[in-house]
Amino acid sequence: MGRTTGGVEIRARSIRLNFTLEGKRQRPTLMLNGKPIPPTPANIKYARRLISEITEKIRAGTFSMVEYFPASGSPSGMTVKGWLDTWLNTQRIEQSTKDGYNSAIKFWNGATCDDKMSTMGPMMLRSLKHTHVLTAIANRPNLTGKTINNYVSVLRDALSLAVKDKLMSSNPAEDVPRAKHQKPPPDPFSREESEFIIAEAERVYPGHVHNLIETWFWTGLRTSEILGLEWPNVDFSMGQVLVASALVGGEQKDRTKTAVARIVQLNSRAMSALQRQRELTLIAGKRVFQDPRYSKDWKSEEAFQRVFWARMLKRLCMRYRRPYNMRHSYATAMLMAGMTPAFCAKQLGHSVEMFLRTYAKWVDGNQNDVEMARLENSIMSPASPQKRRSSRK
Image (tube, rainbow, N blue to C red; front, side):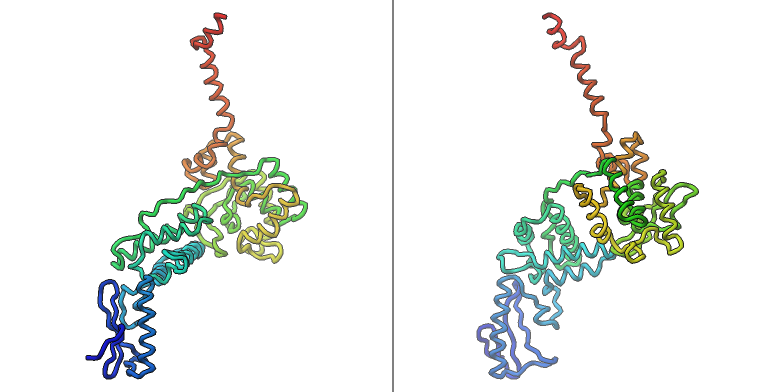
């Protein structure tokens, strides 16, 4: 037996610390290169500084047994950061999805909890409470509702696995309320605006960019689908495109966003643009559209948006909208031409329900005026009291 002072137990040939963690007494021996360190005056001084540091971290809820004493192997020593990293490594996901998860994990690791100087990342996993999660969100009022919901979703899934692995008794993120978020409505270009943009592209960026923009406006493909479109999937004889691949995070994937291939029928405008593009890239490789600056496949939307798209809209003194709005423009053009929602939804790769919900404003079209006219006719019908009062005067 040795003598214990202030949590430091000095033994004949070793030094042992003495502290309580989560209601359990811990007595780890200080080791160096696999051997107990001797109780020299310098080592005893070091042990006292260490126990003071450990006590402070236990009080703050940020102490990790595994971090200080790896040989303990105690799962209770897992930190929030350690577990989020472990959870991420278990996920079989696309790189683009992983990038989004990493953003969420970075937020939680650096998110403030009870006091504004501490962070959730170093906290003991079992010490994490519902209050910590809510406080972290409250301390970032600049985040949008959509971003908050995405971040909470990642945390909830990670902690759910921790509960299944019996590292936690309950999930502190389970009942975090969803932040209010209103998805912005589609903001398509008018037919006149579309034609101005196509004409400007032909004038300033003839060839690759002009053909890309006109095809985009008149097929309504998603960004990942049009930049990843390949020549084997373009059938001029049938006048259609098989959408079965996509460019995601700079990588060509053999599936679309919804993992469902579809056939898109080509109208004359899209057909003409693709025929012009055929002369430029059919022999060069599989990808239909290329970055004209380097004669190489597009790696992402960012370069097109920054170098070509934004500059064109600025020259046209046109309100800026993302290139994705060319897809919305095609959807509304079809509806205003009187095409059925079922056909339009199939062209875009939507369910009919999703299509109707997204484009309800244009689905209604002039029908709103027709329906209101029916009500007005009913109001002013011979059976209407207002009509009868008017006839008595």
